[in-house]
Length: 456
Image 1 (tube, rainbow, N blue to C red):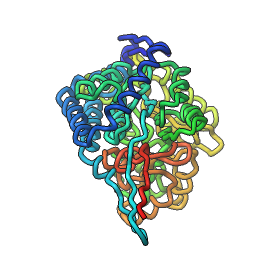
Image 2 (image 1 turned 45 degrees about the vertical axis):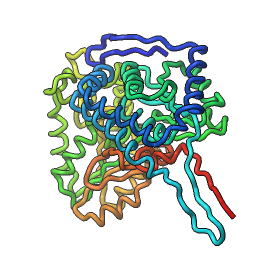
Image 3 (image 1 turned 180 degrees about the vertical axis):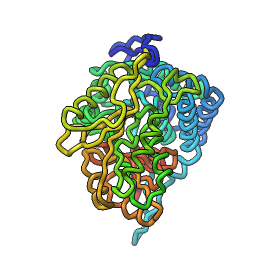
C-alpha cells in the first residue's frame, strides 16, 4: 500500500513515503524487543512519567503545527484538529499521572498467609490505527501501555503518514529510548508477519469490521490477546419529554463532527412521534446551515471527507438506500463546484428493516431519521443493529434516562449529550463494534499480566 498525503480539499498529492522492507522491519522488531527487555520494563513509573509528560507539553507548545498536519492529510476543520491535539495531550498527561495508582499491587483477603495481585508488562505490542483521529487514536493506545512498561509498534493509516511520523518524533524528542515507540510503514502482508512474530505479545486495532475480523483471527492463531474498536451506528434517542432545542443542537454536532467521520457519531436519529415533526424541522434547518470550504479557514463549517474514495462509498450507500425505498429529505449528493471530496449534509427517512442501509454504518454527514411511537419502540429500534458502540438518550427526567440507558445494548450511553471522549471515561463497545476498553483505568489493564503471589 502507498503511504501518501493527499489533501482532500483539493485532491493534490502532497508527499509520498516508501514502505520499509522485511529486513528493516526485522531490525525494528529487534530494537523494540531489546528496548523492552533491557530498558523500558525496568524504568520506574517516575521515569516513564517524565517522558509522557514531556510529550504532552510539546504537543501543547506546537498545537498549531500538529493540528495543521491533521487538516492537511484528512481534512478535519482546523478548530477540531486543535481540539484533537489538546485531547491527545490530556491523555498523555492522564496516564502519566494515574498509571502507578491504577497498577498498584492489590492485597487479597485469604484465611491463611498472604496473597496479592501484581501487574507487570507483557512485552512488545502492535497497534493498527485509523485516519479519522490520527493523534487521539494513537495516544489512547500508546499512553497507557508505555506507562505500564510495554513498548509499542504502530502501523498507522496510509493516508496520514505525516501525522504518524510527527507522533513518533514527538516521543523521541520527549526522551523515549529507541524501540519504545516505533512507527511502521508496512504492507498488509507485513502486518500479518508482525502479528505472527513471537516477539509480539498483544495486538490492538481501531478500524473496520472487516479489518477487525482479519486481525483478530491472526492474533488468535498465535494465542495473543487482542482488543478491537470497530464501527458504530449509534442511536440518538429523543423521548417525548426532551428539551427540543438542546436535543437538536446535540444531534447536529453529534452527526456532523469531523464531517460525520467518527465511529461514535450520532448516526441513527430516533424521535418519539410526539416531538418528531418539530424536531425534524429544526434539525433540517440546522443541517442546511453548514458552509463548505477550506478546512484551514476558521470560517468554514463543513470540511471535505477524507478522500475521493470515501465520498464515492458514501454516495453509493445513499443511492442504494434510495433504491430500496428510503426517502432523501435533504442533500444526498456531492457538492458541486468544489474540487474536494465534499458531501451535502443529508437526511434519509423511511428506512425499513429490509433496506440494507438500516444495518450499515454511514461514515460521513448522513443522518438516518426514524419516528417511533414511544420509549419502548425507541429502545427496540436502537438495539436492532449489528453494532453496539455508543448511544444517546434525551429526556428531562434523568432517572428515566438512566433506565432507558440500561436497556441499550452498547458499551457507552450518554444522557442529554452526544458521545464525548475524555481520558477518564472508558471507551469501547460490544457486538460488531468490538471488544476491550481504552482510556480510564480500564484502558491500562488490557495488556498487563495480573500475577498472583501467594505466601503460605
